[in-house]
Amino acid sequence: MWVLLLGVRTGRGTGMFHCFLGSSGRQVLLLLLVLLHNLLSGVWCVITRGILASSVAGDTCEFGCDRRCLHTVVLVTGATRELGQMLVHFVQCQYSTWAMSMGKHQSFVPYAAVLLLCMHMPLLYNASPTTPMFERREADRLALLDIKAKMTDDLMLQVTSSWNDYLYFCQWHGVSCGCRHQRVTVLNLQSSNLVDSISPSIGNLSFLRIINLSNNTIHVRIPHEIGLLFRLQILNLANNSLEQQIPASLSLCSNLRVLAIGNIKLIGKLPVELGSLSKLVTLHVLSNNLTGAILPSFGNLSSLEALQMGNNILEGSIPDSLGQLKSLTLIVIEGNELSANNQLEGSLPQNLGLTLPNLRRLSIWENKFNGFIPASLSNASNLELLEISMNRFSRGMSIKFGKLKVLHWLGSNNFVGALPSSIASLSNKLEYFSMGGNGISGNIPTGIANLQSIRFLNMHHNQLEGNIPASIGLLHKVQEMGFGEIPSSLGSCSSFIRLLMHYNSFEGAILGSLSSLKAIEELDLSHNNLSGEIPKDLGIIRLLRNLNLSFNDLKGEVPTRGVLVNASAISIYGNKRLYGGVPA
Image (cartoon, rainbow, N blue to C red):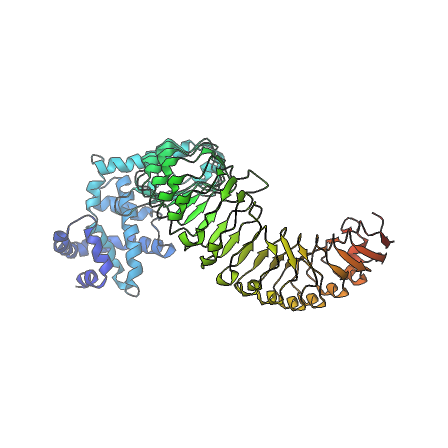
């Protein structure tokens, strides 16, 4: 009676009748279950305990096979050891999900094992060495062994120590199988110290949906055979040393959603065929040596949300076809002065903020873009990061900052004139604000103190005048600041780590209240018109490691206290009226 109730009370469990048998066999199986109960319940109690221990340890399909359980299966079913391994793994895999839904009804557990055995007896037929299903599983096992053989490093052998004849291959480290067909669906060996090459046999794992071999030292090339994996959804090979071109055959993986092949020393041009991957959501090719242009065919990637192509040697302009990608939220095509630089040029589409309404991040710094910064970016109300510095844009900016309510990072260049009052209306989430190296003049708006989340504020290398407003002392979260004459209220910004005011035209004295900045490590006041003496209290700032007061109009004796006695930590060149101190 309880057995029949079990089929009714766990709807998810009854669905498993249809894994291998049609619904017409359900009543027959239940009757068979009752007849076999007295014979098998005691035997399968041992198996149930092994299964329950596995389901408590985790809800995946990677379980150890208890030898007693395996022996029992072999005795009851007459199966070979290998088929017994497969059946136990399969029952465990199904049971773990089912047991989670049973909750407090753990008293049904002894019956569950018997029910699962009866349901999945057809496995023994499908796993027979004479059936095509067995041959396909064996092809998966042999492909995995060939992958192991191509990576013969001692560390690799440790990682794949479980890849042996004593464990069913679906239980090998880094391998996951589907519960129904027992075919390999996931190969996850990230950060496993893998070396050498990826075997072409990976193309024989035809049920693969996820490949993650990131953060290893694999080299040679990306196998063309990966293009045979039409079920593949995620391919992550990032942070390796493959040093070859992107194979055009990847375009045959029609279900691919994530292609992450960044930082693997790829060369050559982007294959035009990649534009056919209509389900692709993320394209990550950062930090390679790719050349050529961003292809117009990428406008066909209708599902694309993230385009990351920075730190390459790309050239040309951004194709207008990218404006068709309405789901695009992230564009990263920035350069990097420590490696190869993109050489993209031309102007940005002036309707950029209109055609990409969901854009959240636009990072194109260190390229050769020219023309005007699109005013339509004001309409990109979801914009969180805007980094367009180190380009060749025409002077002037007409973005209405007050509309960017969720912006938390702003970096720009070639901004001229006074800062608009709308700066004060920027998002209260703004944490990074950099307009260094522009042509900004005039005073700093007092409303800038409204940016209560700001941590980095950089406006050096401008033509600012006057004083920093005293209200800026209300920015208690700021850690790094770069501009202007220091007001006395700045001493209340106790979280300061860096204060950079170099290359401006500010006047006045260095205030002793700076000694209140207990966390400050770097203070650069060079290349201004500061006057007066160096405050002695600067020497009591314990964490201060770099003090640059050079090229001002300071006078008097240099104090000999704290950092001021460390010749390698202080620079006072260009102050002709200073004397004394520690010799350089």
